[in-house]
Each structure stands twice: as structure tokens, then as C-alpha cells.
Length: 132
Image 1: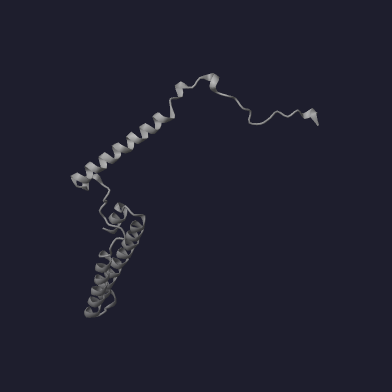
Image 2: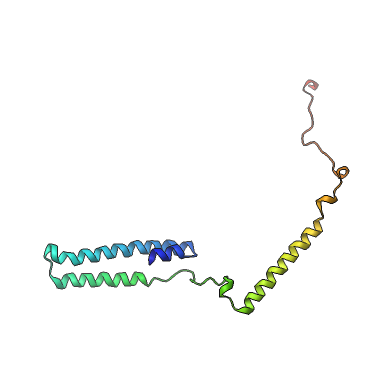
């Protein structure tokens, strides 16, 4: 679950935290398997092995409840907005497009420029090498 949460996270910080927590969860799960098998392999008493296993299970549960830094809901997603907010967003976008079109009309059209209106200015003056 941690790797999925890391890959789906919108925030890079939340993604990094989730990936590190996923590594920690895998390590705790491995420790739980070791604690459980210690009874059979090393002859550790069952009560002690069960307590270690229970403590590791609590740690795994705590890792699964770590909160996000940013909310998981994308409040800018139009599909999650109310109808009124979506309509306002559409009106704002249309206004912005009209403003951009008006600004482009104020600049003028390139086709209106005559070749005679363009003045060619040399960027560097020609230097006569024999003039020194």
C-alpha cells in the first residue's frame, strides 16, 4: 500500500515519505517473520516470541496510520468542484482568453508592416584595418 501511495501522491514530499515508510513496513514484516520462526529454529519460548511479534505488529500499524503533509484531495480538480465553482472557473478561463485576444489585437498584425518601414541598422561598424 505504501508504494502505491507513494506513486499516486501529488506532493513530492508525501511521495518520498510514503516510499520510506513502505521500506520500513517491509523491514518490520521481515522482522515479524524472523520472530515467528525463531521459536522453531532457536527454541525461543513461545510467549517471548509472541510478545516481540505483537510489538512489531503495533509498529507496522503505526506506520500505516502516518498522515500526509498535503491533503489527498485535489481541490483544483474540476470534477470534484461544485457546479457553481465549476461555472465560475469556466467564466474566469473565458475572460482570460478574451483578455489575451484583446492584447494580441492591440499589437497589430505582422502583415500590416511594409518592407519600406523597416530600417536596417548594422550591429557592428565596419572597421578598415588599414586605417591605423
